[in-house]
Image 1: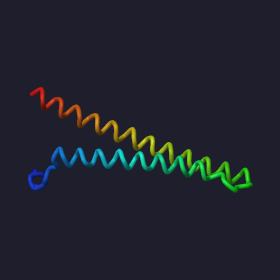
Image 2: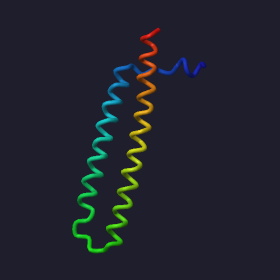
Image 3: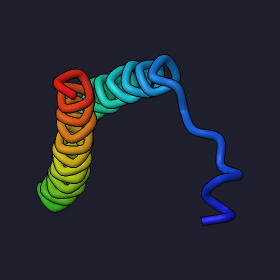
Image 4: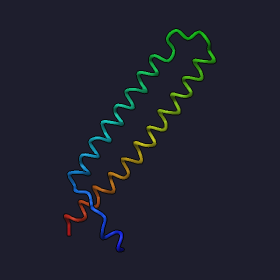
Length: 88
């Protein structure tokens, strides 16, 4: 408890800024994946290379979706806490 008392808590403004930055970052990642997917097959002759690139991009896209889902769940918890505080 002594360590916790020395911790500086984040303000709601700081949390809101982190939320905004996270959303921009996730959108940027999604756009980059889309652009990579578009460019991945240009000039590639080998079906094996195309298949490999598609699989890698599918994996990265799936990972981003899981990160976005986790972020959404964490944000929902924060919103619920704010609503509960206001009710008190």
